Image (cartoon, rainbow, N blue to C red; front, side, top):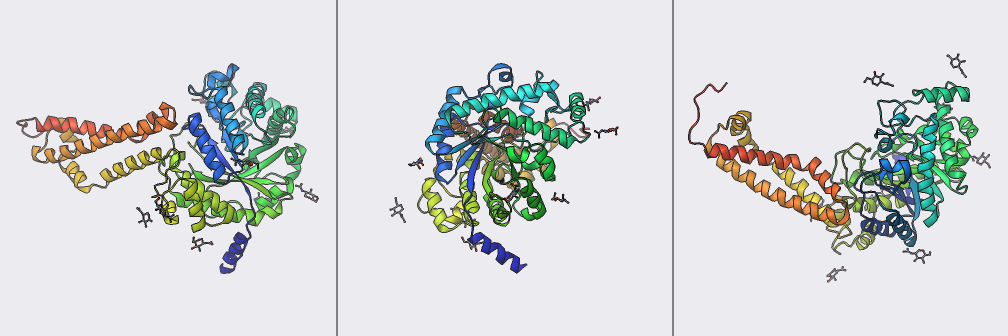
Length: 499
Ligand SMILES: *[C@@H]1O[C@H](CO)[C@@H](O)[C@H](O)[C@H]1NC(C)=O
Ligand SMILES: *[C@@H]1O[C@H](CO)[C@@H](O)[C@H](O)[C@H]1NC(C)=O
Ligand SMILES: *[C@@H]1O[C@H](CO)[C@@H](O)[C@H](O)[C@H]1NC(C)=O
Ligand SMILES: *[C@@H]1O[C@H](CO)[C@@H](O)[C@H](O)[C@H]1NC(C)=O
Ligand SMILES: *[C@@H]1O[C@H](CO)[C@@H](O)[C@H](O)[C@H]1NC(C)=O
Ligand SMILES: *[C@@H]1O[C@H](CO)[C@@H](O)[C@H](O)[C@H]1NC(C)=O
Ligand SMILES: *[C@@H]1O[C@H](CO)[C@@H](O)[C@H](O)[C@H]1NC(C)=O
Ligand SMILES: *[C@@H]1O[C@H](CO)[C@@H](O)[C@H](O)[C@H]1NC(C)=O
C-alpha cells in the first residue's frame, strides 16, 4: 500500500502538462453575455486552453427548432460577441450539442414528441427515425456554422452520455436494425454516432468529434473500427467522484479504449456534481476529484498513442434539463481555480494561492487555507452573487439550528395551535418576535439576491432560485406570523375537547 502511494507521488511529481477545457453549461443560469465574457477572461487567466460551451436551449436557433428555444435565448449577435471574445482571450471553443440522450429540451415539447425512443420518456431520441436525423442535421449545422464563422472549430462535442432509455424500442429502430442486419442495439447506436459525426465532418472535415465515453466503455475495438469511430471520434472519459477513480475507471477499461482510440480526453468536475440540490460549493471534494484525475492521467496517458490530450473540467448548472439549479459559477470560481491547479500538478501550493489570489482579485491576506475553506473574500466578477447566496444559506441554517425557537414551536405552535389559533399568548409573543425578525431579514436578503443575480443573469434565474430554495422558508414564517397574530389578538379560548 505505501509502495503504491509512493509510486503515485512519484508520478504526480512527473506530471505532464494537459490541456484544460472549462465546461460552460447553459442549461441552467445562463449568464448575460457580459458576464459570460468576464468568466471567459477568468478561465483563460486560470490556465484554460479552451471552453466547452453546452448551449442547450440558449442557442439562437431558427426554423422549426426555434420552437424549443428558451425565451431568453442569446441573439446571433450575442453569440458572435461571446465567440469573438473567446478568440481574443485565446480560448479554443468547443461546441457541445447532445445528439442521443439528454435531449429533454427538444423531446419535452409536443412538436418533437414523435422523435422519442419511448413515447413516455423525454430523454432519448429514436435514433432509427429519419426525422431524428433531419432534426439533428439542422441543429448541428446551425451551431457548427455559426461557430466556424467566428472561431476555429478543431473539436465538436456530440454528448451521448446517459442514454438511459434502451434503444430498439421505437418502430423505426426496429426497421433500421433490420436494414443493418442486426439484432444488436449497440450496432444501431454506433451507426447513429457515425451518422452524427458525418453530419459535422462532411461539412467540416478537419473537426474532431468528441463524445462522452458511455457507449464505448465495454466496446470491442473491431466494432468501433467497423463504424470508423476510431478515426472519427475521441471518447471523453468522465467521472466526478472525489475518490477511488481507479476502481470506477479500471486499468482494463483504459487498455481497451487505447486499443481502439489513439487518444482520449478526461472529464472532471468543479461544480454541479456534489448533490443535485447543492447551492453552496464545498470545494474539497472537487479538489480531490481533480487530484484523482491527475493520477489517472499519469497512470494511463502512456497507453494511448497520442496520450490523453485534454481534460474537460465540467461545471454542471443542473443535473439535467428538469432538475433545479445546483452550485452556480460565482460560488465556484475558487473551486475552479484550485481544481485546475490540482489537475496540472496533483497538488496546490502556497504559490498557487498567491497566483489565484491575484487572478481572482482577493485581498492580499488571502491564504491557501481560506481558498480551500471557501471563506475567502475574493472580489472576482460575480462575487456579490456568491455573497448573497452564502448569506441566505447561512441565515436559513441559523434558523434551523436555533433550538430555543424549535422548542417553542414544538410545544406551543403545533398543528392545533396553528389551525385553531389556540395557544398561550405569553409564549406566542416571544416566538412572534423571532419570526418577524427572520422574515424581515430574509426578505432583505431576497432583495439582494434579485439585485445581485440581476446584474449577471436573466431575471428568471433569481426567481427560480428563490422559488426553489428560499420561498418555502419565508412562506412558513409569513403563515406563522399571521397565525400568531390571530392567537395574540384573542381574548378567550373554547373549553376542551377540541376534537
Ligand atoms: C493570446 O496569444 C497571443 C499569442 O500567443 C499573445 O500575444 C496574447 O497576449 C494572448 N492574449 C491573451 C489575452 O492571453
Ligand atoms: C407508455 O405508458 C402507457 C401507460 O401510461 C403504456 O400503456 C404504454 O405501453 C407505454 N409506452 C411504451 C412505449 O412503453
Ligand atoms: C434476429 O433475431 C431473430 C429472432 O431471434 C432471428 O430469427 C434472426 O436471425 C436474428 N437476426 C440477426 C441478423 O441476427
Ligand atoms: C476489456 O476487454 C476485454 C476483452 O474484450 C474484456 O474481457 C474486459 O471485460 C474489458 N474490460 C472492461 C473494463 O470493459
Ligand atoms: C498505435 O500505434 C501502433 C504502432 O504504430 C499501431 O499499430 C496501432 O494501431 C496504433 N493504435 C491506435 C489505436 O491508433
Ligand atoms: C500537498 O500540499 C500540501 C501543502 O500545500 C502538503 O501538506 C501535502 O503533503 C501535499 N500532498 C501531496 C500529495 O503532495
Ligand atoms: C497588502 O495590501 C496592503 C494594502 O493595500 C499593503 O499595505 C501591504 O503592503 C500588502 N501586503 C503585501 C504582503 O503585499
Ligand atoms: C476560514 O476557514 C479556516 C478553516 O476552517 C479557519 O481556520 C479560518 O479561521 C477561517 N477564516 C475566517 C476568516 O473565517
